[in-house]
Image (cartoon, rainbow, N blue to C red; front, side, top):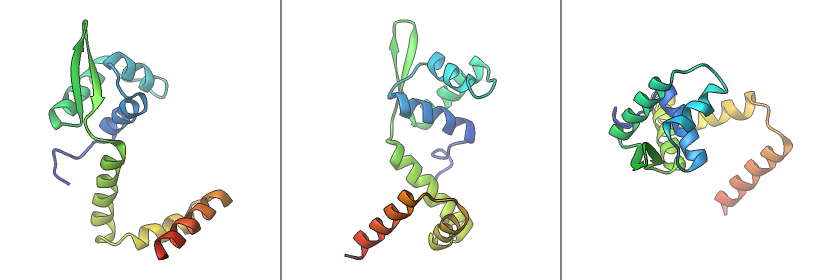
Length: 124
């Protein structure tokens, strides 16, 4: 993943809000993030401008505020993040990650059934 494409944890938190809403202003994102922890409005504004510069969000002027929309679908960005993680941590092999998740995470019976269904579909 190119440095420009990488998201910091704070940028990813902002992207989650923008993806969930479809579009958002700095105020919208600030209010959503402030429910979980204290964050300065100016910090959110700066990070959203960085996300626009990096090409993760597009923005348009609407009255006196910018409205930000995702420039890339969540699945595409998450896929790249996961691929980068697997490459760095597991030398490109997803199997150790999958084994860890299955063995050490508490999966519901519905989640296990879904995993089995996916594996069976892939085998066909």
